[in-house]
Length: 283
Image 1 (cartoon, rainbow, N blue to C red):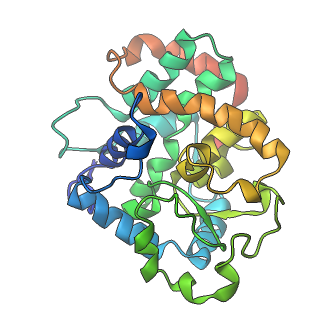
Image 2 (image 1 turned 180 degrees about the vertical axis):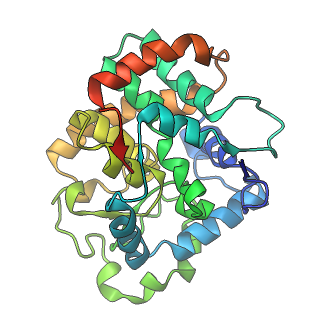
């Protein structure tokens, strides 16, 4: 089993999740969203690395590397068990496995009567974090995502750390549209690399379009919470983002729910998985 304790700068991958949750706490005054003075030093260091190293060339290279889907062939539940080997022995605040975290999200969506494909999306949305098991550093796995190849919105957390990004010296990347067309759609946009983009490429052939948007953009807080990139989106993107926004509270706030019984729930979810996925898919 692999530990994250020595894989800094975060003490655990969940530390990023918890930081996002605190940033967008239900009922929190909107004026407090941009206050990062209380962020732990490890979170600040995470974003310094992320914003310095997530260049357009890096994101495109990783998309080409992992988009080939030639790492392995696994079924969805098998991938969940594989992700479960990512052990966080540095987080004293939770004793939940990765599978149990995923089940919490899915069960919250199911309780509220949403479509079965959305329940499944809740179950699998974080499976792209297997990138850590492939040896990718945390800053290339988690973090708020954003377009690369255009000016960075000031709505991105720790925006000041982009001062160290080499793309700052490429003039065509420093306009609001950058290399993209105004209202040309997110399908034309290269996003920063991480678990969202990876899982989108793994699962996009099997799920309805709203689920694809949920997976690909659930960490795109600069848009679905801050509206920082509306100028790149089409009317269809905005329609699909209503699903992303609907999904987001389940992603943020299900962690504190009761611990799910993975053994009892497995037959239900294996049947649900089989409705959309073959026995094995390429990763």
